[in-house]
Image 1 (cartoon, rainbow, N blue to C red):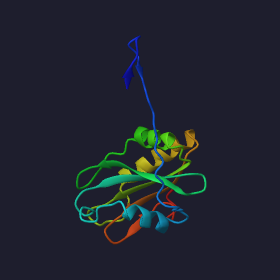
Image 2: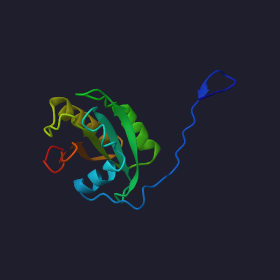
Image 3: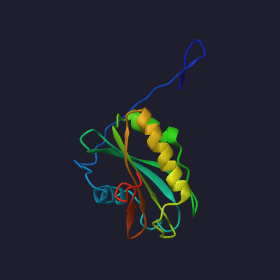
Length: 149
């Protein structure tokens, strides 16, 4: 932020495109393959993390965002941050991905609630929540594939 003469802060928003090849996401498996490239497999069973894959209207990956790192059983998902990043890079679709360090692929009630809230919020901004994926060291579960979205 930059202070102006009147004492009101001016906010500067910038975005640097750094496309991840020509990666296109058409299935949950595509999304998992992409996000695993940016996940530290040595800590996937230790600490919960949340990442967001940002896509354009052709389902091509614009980039990903490290949303949060939490503890063993939870991590914060601030919907305002998710939407601000999506809007900043002009994403038309997002995929939320988080790990379950304990290896259980079943979504918790907190997982289900945040996905519902995020989907409603995205709809207001004309951004599609395409999927929410839970990953473990060896497997994954897709909300879209399971009809939970």
